[in-house]
Length: 193
Image (cartoon, rainbow, N blue to C red):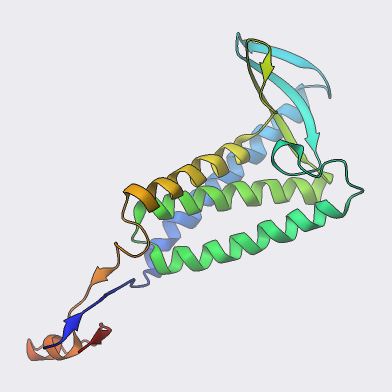
C-alpha cells in the first residue's frame, strides 16, 4: 500500500497576484510619503483627530528607532536585510502561493520592506508621518510600509497558530502508481511505502 504525503505544490501563476499586492503596497506607501514630503514641514505637527497627528520624521534606524543614532552603517545593513528577506519571500510565494493567508502576510511584509528600502536608498532614512497618541503616550511615528509589515507579521503568526500553516496545508496528491492506474499518466506525487 502506498501512503500519500502532503507536499506543497508550486503554483507560480497564482504567485503573481501576491507580487501585484506587494507592488500596490509599495505604490501607496511611496505616494503617501510624497504627499507628506510636499505638505508637511520637518518637525511640524498637523492635528487630524484627538488621537492622531501628521508629522514628518526621518528614521535612520529600524522599528522604534532601533540603531537610529549609529553613524550610517545601519542604512546599508537594513537595506541588505530587507532585500534578503524579500528574496526569501519571493521563494516562499512561489512555493506556497495557494496558501492564501500566508501569502497575503508575505506579500504585505515584502511590499512594506521594499517601500522602506526605497526611502533608505533615496533619503538615507525612512520617512515616517503617522503619529498616534493616547493620554499623553505617543506611539513612534510610522508609515504605510510599517503598517503593512506589522499586519503581515500578525497574519503570519495567526496562520501558523490557527490557519492552514506551512505543514498542514500542503495538497494531498495521489501517488504516481494510483494516478497511472486511473489513466491520467501524471506523476505529481511524492510518496512513501
